[in-house]
Length: 68
Image (cartoon, rainbow, N blue to C red):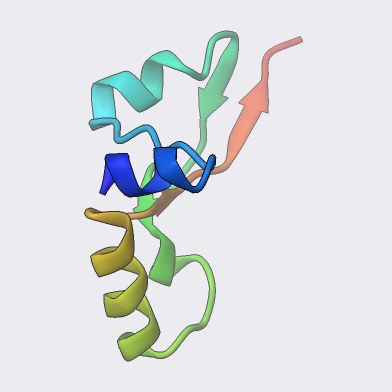
């Protein structure tokens, strides 16, 4: 999967949860935390399965807040 995206000049960077959290920097993860993308937006299950298959893994979303 990664090789395909490199060939089409759209690299993908698979990350596990600790690596994703490290990207937040000064931002704080808000409830409900990291959630599968299909829980954030209303999509048909078949589209979620296709996107997951194409991406090679889970797609997640999050809400962040910056401390002042």
